[in-house]
Image 1 (cartoon, rainbow, N blue to C red):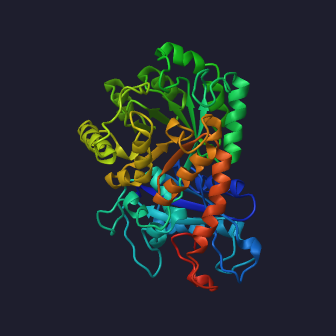
Image 2: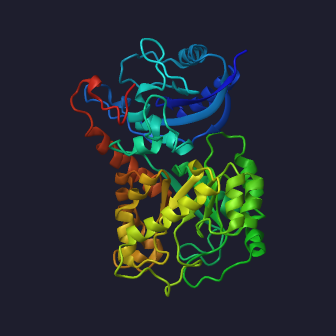
Image 3: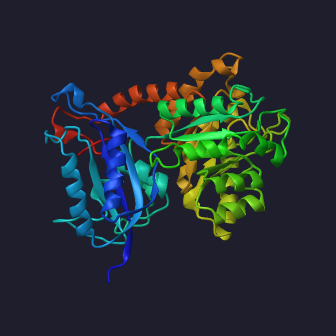
Length: 448
């Protein structure tokens, strides 16, 4: 009797209705017996085709990774995959031509196979951002059979570029520093979420308590009273869509986090850095992701800051290493932890800039990194005093985070970021095309 092997499958589309194609491919994989456990966020990567092909081939891809099980052999699963691809097959078979669907058998249990025939793990997994980025979102600390001790996040650090996930902000508060009072009613919140989804936010972060300097701390009961009218309805609206944005709850109250998780929240964004034993217990027992942020106080206080004469990167990294020891001893699944260096929380403006400058350094410890810098007061010397006028400065910092391979970038103006990033990445990717020959396309960006 065959046992079920935990497997990972990648799916990519860059022709036609890409999201529809991905959804249909998921359904067809489920129909042939692939039991989907988790779906990664959708990642967009540029095509970077040579100049000798039709211009409309220069279509960005949408990619996802699936974690699941299959009761059968990898060869049998691959035959089913090829049949699904034939159903979608384009009439153009040029190596650089866009395709409605491509499916990749990335890992099959611990199987290690060499060509000819089926190769496992999939050979281009470690040097193709359209495959590796969704996988890092699912299992950053996973090691590959036959590839030594490097984890997926280690492999992603070797790529010329790792696409970020964009986290859009929804402040369900009357007193947030940037947009307090803009999203109070259920209709306002739902409209905001829909606009973030259309703009390309892979994660939507909902917060009901402001943590700006001087903000009044809320009780868990007060915080939940702001979330309860809309959160159940919002999660139910998106529940059946496998490509929906992931929903994050920005809270440091364990009771609020517990209620959110019971409703189906995907991520708990804890600005207190998993410092509460109750929050740590939730993280250990849950399948959700948790963001742990470095901080000196919550809410942030202008009277509590790192000393000016210390290295802020080294200080924050030391805090992280201590936390990692605690989390590891407690049995926490570190695949589900993201680290936020806490820009603006207990740091001077120059210290915050230094943390942004070197944010990717924290990835070397095996955790995904999230940076939330949008419109914050450390930008006052770079932009207008009005927070809403700091989107340009925010964007400049965000593009620097992109060059480093930071995993999640948390911003207010998602549409500005995604459209700018798409144009910026086109030229980053084109620098990888060494000639007009399709075979010269560098696999770090895109290759069939």
